[in-house]
Amino acid sequence: MKKTLVTLLVFVFVIGFAGIAMASSNPFTDVQQGHWAYAAVDKLAADGIVDGYGDGTFRGDRAMTRYEMAQVVAKAMAKSDKANAEDKALIDKLAVEFNDELNNLGVRVSKLEDKTKIGLNYESRLRFAGDNNNASNKQGSGAFDFRQRVYFNGAVNDKTTYAARLTTGDVTFGSGTSAAVSFDRMYFTFSDVIFDKVTLGRFGTLGVTNGLLNGSTGNNDGIKVEKCLGDNAKFTAMFFDVSGNSASNEIGLANIDFKLGDASGLNIGYQTANLKDLTSYNELNGSLKAKSYDVGAFTKLGNVNLTGEYVKTSFADGVAANTGDAKAWAVQLSTGVTPYLYPTYILVDPTKAHSDAFALSYRKVDSGATPVTSAFFPSAPVITGANGDLNKTGLAADNNVKGYYFTYQNVLSKGVVFTAEYQDLKAVTADGDGYFAKDKVYNASFQFFF
Image (cartoon, rainbow, N blue to C red; front, side):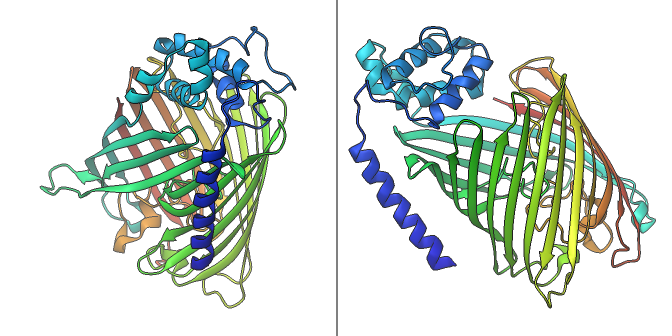
């Protein structure tokens, strides 16, 4: 598997840079259907930055020329001071993509390129978390902690972008300790290299499926490819390693998202897992080989997103964790900016002061049904329980559990987000200590984005 991954990386690099060298700057060349620029302009139009494609109308089924697209980008650049951080990043990326055409129009982008060669964004979090520790019949516990992160992003050229993240761990106030600072993510993304997008490096798996099967924000080493299948479907595939204590845990996933109208969607996914080191994951001790089938859907009901997902996982014979099938399902109501199961995504736009959102979900997850990469997997538990059992008190624990999860977010002022979370879970079957009850866990935090 390692040799296969290395071969894929070399192949994509060679084809990618060869494609870059041969790229044409002809302004009358069509922008192919499925090109990421259409989705970017759709997003800018929805946010009121542009009012259509060129002549004020929307594209429909007609492909645009690069010259026409450059006209749209020029309009967006003229209104960039009114854009939020996400839209500004899209405008910058579009400006680099259509640099030659914009220069033909007399729109100078050299200063913009210099400014955005490496962009920096910062996140700082202050948090209090606690639990009532009912599972072990002990007094509840709680703690204040903080975390710091710096995000790097930039354009290597018109078809290659770079991103990385510098982070600390969670540092408990009053402990007298500090956390190491490290780069926990680094990846390159290539556009129009066989696929619409190819991502290589160490990245998170956000947004693949609706989150129950594969929505972890963990740091995964591998490759991800994305391809639009017409206007209403998108194919995503990944192969990556999830770190264990000493051995690699290999996961492959293929997923197709279908757009059903303006406010609904459906996804169908398939995942294979060859997990060799699960000693840090409690009830999944040892190794595990499994295949998972996933179906998810969402629809918008007024201002509320209704999201559901179902997972069925089959295990290889002789695996210690389970020899039969395990199932998981979740349903969620949310007013968040995306329909995905929280905590996969932040619920609010940090640039929109005084906006707020909530998410309320229920889930039932058999032991091993969502191996390692679920949105709710306890990669960073809030408080550890008796004997270090992460599943008793992790706010996002998602193995052998059923119960409710609630979160509320409010943008107190631009860039300042308050979050309150609460969870009350029970075990589907008795855990190793004989407990069916899980802790009531709560969390309140302030995040600063700038």
